[in-house]
Length: 285
Image 1 (spheres, rainbow, N blue to C red):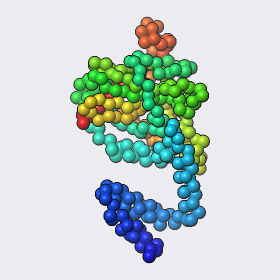
Image 2 (image 1 turned 45 degrees about the horizontal axis):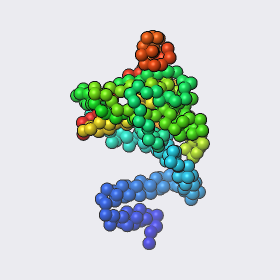
Image 3 (image 1 turned 30 degrees about the horizontal axis):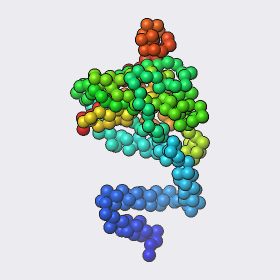
């Protein structure tokens, strides 16, 4: 028979035969922290019901191309905390940051130098870099997965009737010296989706939904630990107040203006354009 002083210990005791030790540890910690939260805040029945309704609505918003639970984790800072706890990259390697909720579809395989901006309308940009091991050795054949919003701040999965599938996305294989480059548009700040329960939570807490301008990357190579990261446009709005707390100073990158018709012609972009260089340095596994 459980009552308020004893229910926590009874639930924990009920978990003692869990076969997986790590699962037992996680569930035991979850129960103890949840129960402590309820006691500390004096959680009411009405508040419990509202919380259950919020989580139910969050699950109902999830689809194959939208992950509202990841968005919730992002705005509560949990995604960034877990990413930081598990970041095993050593000094001198590229810092990791959150995956975000829009890596929901496979990026199309593209040739080096391809233009991932299939809709146009944004400021032309060339992004280049090199995938390296921590000691500076180039990593030939490294795979670089890229995705970003369009010039208006929307991902392809948010506008399936406006953007072609795969817009702003590309899966590139680095050359024999680990180099990669592609054409795109300069990203812009944008709001995370606010038409679901996470948006309601932001409004209730007086928070804005904006993210600074950025491009996502996942870099991987044989014998190395993959890294999930962004580059953030230097000078972008919201660098100091990212809605998902993902900005790290070392990931802020200069998107330098270039006014050189010859260079523009060589890259196959309109002049003037912007250019960003960002090396991806991986930790040996």
